Amino acid sequence: MHIKTLNTRNDVMENGLTKTEKRYFYKRFDALDRSNARILSILEADDKIGEKGLVKTVHIMEKTLAELLIREKVYKAKGTVWGIIGGAIFTCCIYFGKYLLAKFFI
Image 1 (cartoon, rainbow, N blue to C red):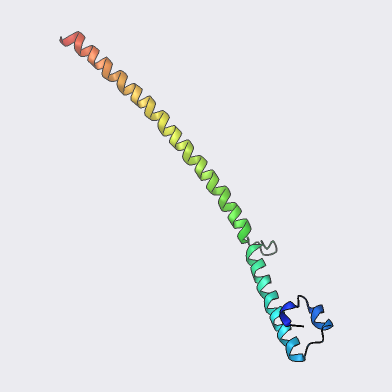
Image 2: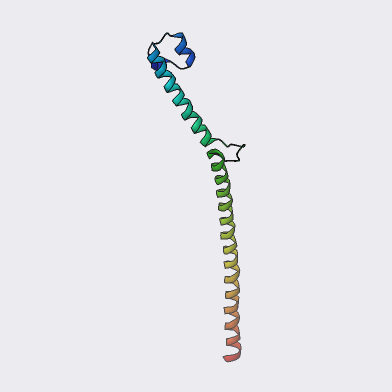
């Protein structure tokens, strides 16, 4: 049986491999196991030391981004409302100024 078709350590024991093949398999298996543990340590949060994992960090960033986008929309709406109010007041002042000029000076 070829080494690439083996999936677990038990497969190695059952298939009568040579010592060199077994050693190679165990080295590869341990290296993959360490790589998998490293990836999981990066992705998952560790509550024992209080470190946030990548998944939790991305979730927090998405939440913060959503809040910022909502806040930006609120600021734009407030600016629009104040612009309309200011424009209305300015227009009223212009018309009232024209009225006063027409009444007193003409």
